[in-house]
Image (tube, rainbow over all chains, first blue to last red; front, side, top):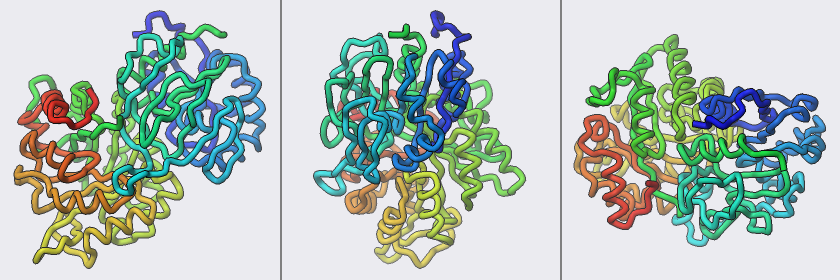
Length: 209
Length: 251
């Protein structure tokens, strides 16, 4: 796999108060890439690829980022950048989770899932769900329609002009976003078997826009 | 569309799988990592590792195992068995587990559920309930179903959801090991009443049982051990069957 990948590229994961980063490191390791988990501004700015993973709560995550000036660093990054799960939500303008103003890379709002029929639609949205309405984009190269990724989340990004793919739970929501050098995915590619691996590989193989 | 999940469960003792497994594909049937990878390749949606190691000093073995699984397996997995503190959970999540499952500790100290949900988020807190029916009432049991508690299953499940559990792993001790099908009525009652997903466990013996627990039982996921380990049902054929029967699964 990934024979075209430059394995000496510098990949960093932004270290902040969010969980589930170890799995992302392992997923990159399976692709032959040693990533570094860091909150060092210089290292992040100098990396070839920046990944912003995470599970957690939006307001405490934003507060943590601001305290360390990481919010500014993220806004100024020019190299390919990938937000994952909470990372996607924090790249939007605002989250309903504790009424949090986020980074504003994507002009999209993050809302909470509201079940239509209680007991039928569970929140959080947990499990494997399909990627639909894929837009032609290097991140999605070789990814077929209607294949499954693993999700765990209670909040979702609305659909918008930067939506690259959708997923349906209760209603359609944004599964993947793209604008300039920023990409973001709501699902967990690091836990999504072959499809998730392909997406991470595509991200690493991107050429700077 | 969100799929129903198929979850093989691996019992672990001292870092090895117990319950004889019979896979010609595996050189070492006792190696949990190899078995986990095999299930993952066959299309299992998640895995559960249940540690039945009795002694505390062997816990280190479990953390090492979790590290190996996280490195090599590309689907989510839950670790349960003997977890009783925030420190236990921290060690397992830091090693790469996606979720942890608690059981007896939640019965003994229900506030642990709140504490874990606050500390790590509900998404990684699975609470297992072992239920057995007595005179028509479902009671929560502990110690592998041997000890009855004063908690009724339905009320306890509701309390767990209120305290911040992310999922309920519901095992019917009456059905476990019988291969006569899941506890459909109890599973449906709890799944319909709760805002969180329910994983049904205990009683899987045929592919029809899985269909029933997803349709009649309204389960979000179904867990089984021996029928997968002994290859009585293969995951690919199970998924093909479910798909044909109109159950949405990942293929």
